[in-house]
Length: 334
Image 1 (cartoon, one colour):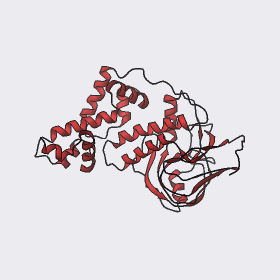
Image 2 (spheres, helix red, strand yellow):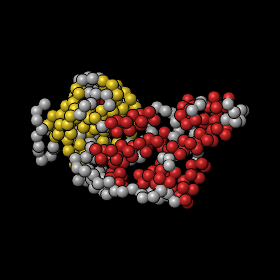
Image 3 (cartoon, helix red, strand yellow):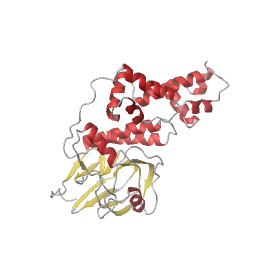
Image 4 (tube, helix red, strand yellow):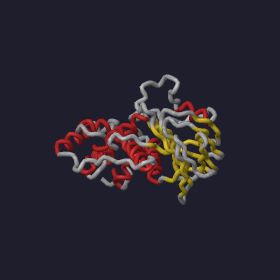
């Protein structure tokens, strides 16, 4: 690969790490950051449609549920080798690599970036950025099609409204972002009614990590709350959780109860209780399940549904993680 060049539009950098090589391209959001219309000459392309075309008609296994800011998730799937001229897409596209081999590259204008596939790396294509992509080996990945509105909400709430210049990444070593994406993939397949709450929190962390580590310039992050929730705020949130313990509670619902952003609510809740909202909800559900297990007329599968789990296996896994015993083992010891 030739040395880095600099033009008015792009700055290409090559970075090396022990895990993988990486390439980065500076990208500035279009002037109209809110995208007034999806029609017209400069309309951005549908992400799912072109990922399917890139894989020669194989549709990505997109999770049916749509998350805040029109964000979509794709569970682990196999990508075959390809060469595809990808148009500017409407979403920010992330891929976490779990297995595979070969080289990946992208050509943007006159600039070429390439890096070897390596487990534990991420690839990131910012919204509105097209290029000729190639991959000469099969890989296994999970994806996030991150809605632009969601990233902008993060910028507005924690970045003082200053827009970032995001960097393209090809097989880039970011252990933090890879870990977050792995946790999201685990939640996708858990069958847990609480997964939505956990995923929303994890997606917020994805946005923060993009601003911190994948922006061309340092992104000043606005300070979070200096103290936790007040007593009345804790009571309002925890009462709501207890009264809706079997429901699919959304993080935004809880934040709205005390008029805070999702980002600041999570920090303030943890400062006040010592737990994340997801962790606190899990403990409440397991505590309720312990009480129900004393009633031997109730089947474990029924208890799982009562406390908000969609499957008995998901309930048993969560119970064992929290208590150290399966529900059946716990009941036998009563």
